Length: 230
Image (cartoon, rainbow, N blue to C red; front, side):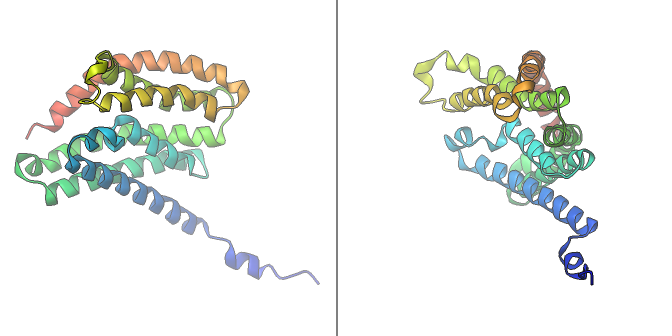
């Protein structure tokens, strides 16, 4: 007599349950990031500089990790999107409820601007994370390079000039955090890629880092100016 399959079926999660759990985790992870970023903003110096939850690289890394947690590449992009939108919503909800002055009044406007950024960055980095998990060869190398280049570009664009003045590091600890971003970005292809993929990964990192380092400063300035207009 063949054994009954009922016990197995009873404990196997349905597709709907898996989707609900995965997207619930994305909402939770994004909300935690947004709440942490808002909380760190309230701590003041030096903690705001030393806890990099407001760094561009940190937000992109969360989307990458959420994408990597997905079972398929398309759902990885969706998880990245949900995660960053949840982070923006949590950050500005706290700002609107607990903040004071004009910045609190303009929280909804700023949330719209950064939410639009999340609509682009979330799926892109979530897709990169899912390709890293499920892909192989040069697509996988390029996926890791995208995150690595973002970390390197942020560190170079905002930290290199500050590291020249070593005597000022006591008053500018954030420069060390930015330097650590560069080191982490350089290490990621070696840590996350297979030996046969590393060469392609580092070549992509070089190209993407140069492009991103040139663009990140002006682009960030424009977005901040748009977000602060209220």
